[in-house]
Image 1 (cartoon, rainbow, N blue to C red):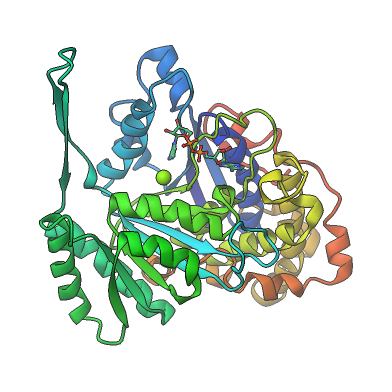
Image 2: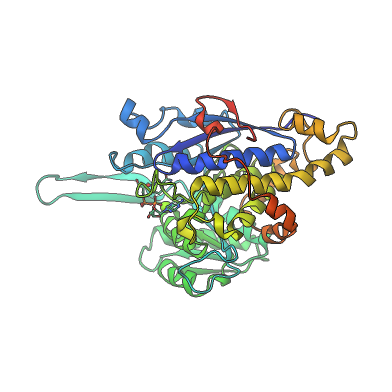
Length: 446
Ligand code: NAI
Ligand code: MG
């Protein structure tokens, strides 16, 4: 069998982006190594700082560059001294459109005990599936009559049947996989061209999924429903603009923007995906150590699922469940006092603790000639992967929308008290990671 290597492009970006990515990479590395694989990270300096230095946020052929990797882990871009639209357009939207990442998957999951301004969120568990390439973010329009006092601006929303069909197809598949109902968000009462096309194409796609219960809800009513009856939701299918707004609202149910992950992927699961927390660069807290890394870490779990490392993804989600259950390992946004680095250390300990039994299990089954010590020495080098970590995009694609923490709480609770105690100490992972190194380094399990 061949060694499993996962080649990541890491784009920290601006503000808290590099902080949450630095916290995430060692956790992913440890989870991958736990299954006998290796994580190789190339750090890309794209973002606002590069723009100020060179005049460009990213190279013009950015999509082609990242096609050489298995996946992209992205923090966020945006800083006070660069106009907001420049990094978002020259990096985020350029990659989404250039790589044809037609689907943006944004799970909303309320971890037990994580505070939310919404009163009752226990059991909330749904996913926003957002069209990612057109709609109101197509970038078509212009301004005229500037400086005359009568300036006009035109922003054209573009909705194509092809794009609606591919994202709706993904969303209905996801609803079927989760045995959950689907809500198609619309606004065809007021916007009677673009959203009428949405209604029509969604109904056509729905006809192919007679087993999926679905309904159409207007976006304004949807905002209210997300607060009033969030447990009634399974899959929320939305256009680019509506999905953007509703997923920030959804994030609040899960404890806030710091907790919310996302995946930008091709509708058929092929190609290179871009995985990023829902939040932006949060310049108001950048450098203070207050950034919650869990949205980024959970995005990393989605990345692992998408690239065929399902067991590693489960390890990461388990670690997140253990970490949020520890009141001393919560950042201020979810009611704690821990720093980003402290949360990162707790996560890494939890992943490593989960890894130990997995390794001896694997050795006794698949690699009888290797002692645990040898396995430890060779961890991350050339080991046989877990059976469930075998590359099999066809079977893992459907799991892309898997929610963070799905099954995580029960598994986490299987940790003995000793193991829990064992995970409290340990080296901080946020420093000296692959993210600190300039080019193509192997993220160690420090
Ligand atoms: P934001 O998501 O960066 O911040 C909104 C609020 O949530 C702030 O109070 C922030 O402190 C808090 N917050 C966000 N993430 C957090 C975390 N991980 N832990 C704790 N608190 C967190 O949105 P905002 O303020 O509208 O935008 C800031 C910059 O980010 C802008 O330049 C914007 O254009 C950019 N942006 C970039 C995105 C991307 O790179 N994909 C997405 C959204 C915004
Ligand atoms: Mg947004």
